[in-house]
Image (tube, rainbow, N blue to C red):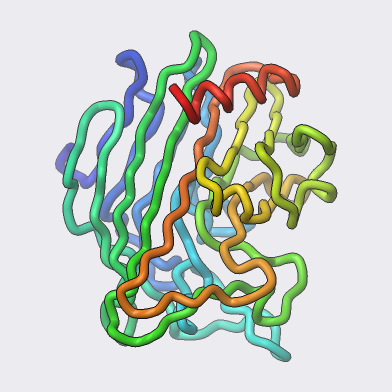
Amino acid sequence: MNGNGTTVLRVAGRPVGRYVTRPELPARLSPRPYLHPVTTLAGTAVTELSPADHPHHLGVGVAVPDVEGFNFWGGRTYVRDRGPTELDNHGAQRHVTFQLRDPDGFVEELRWVAAGGELLRERRTVAAIELTDLAWALDLTFSLTNVTGNPLSIGSPATNGRPGAAYGGFFWRARKEPSAPEVLTAGADGAEKAHGRPADWLALRGGTWTLVFTGATGQTRRDPWFVRSGEYPGVGSSLAHDARVPLPPGDTLVRRVVTVVADGRLDRGDAAALVRRAVNP
């Protein structure tokens, strides 16, 4: 870790990701640690930070728009019967310590705090895994524990009345290019067919790169994917797809997403093979 609060992930000695632990951001962006830039092994950046269309999109990380009414996503809050609304309800994720830190990964402890104090304690595990000369994988697990002593619940704009907007959890804001990236799963083509549905894996294929996302635990595989390609390129999980997720005092919610980062445009066979190798290296 260097003096400005960042640590660099490496694969076979090559830097592939920069993790910022203490970003200096306005409260409206829900400050939180993030990975940016994340690159292919050839050096192509496949993330964006605070793009003009969504300044609160911060590379790769964990973000939730509604934890008991507090916004840990950034930007406006979707309010039932009112729509997107500017509220003074933003929380922040605060880095506490690295329990382990190596060139190819780390284990981190974070506090999710808002006006009411600390709501969640997170343990985040990140690993960079070498796969081939053209591909590596980012393995990210987050565990959220309710530390308040009171029941909490996790929601989304979808559970608050906005259909199709069940974002929240793992989120990857991808590289924006003149042409929208292609979206494919094992059995479907296009963002419209992939969005809002579970899939064993989901690929975002750009001009010279491919990202392949997979849920690496049973519960994560059951979460539908949140997918955008035309308006902006982004892929995330949907923790609260059609109902709020209860989190009683002391309970822990765990999710693991593994992402293959590849140079070139992978076909379905190559995408599936690399996912299998990434999940069970």
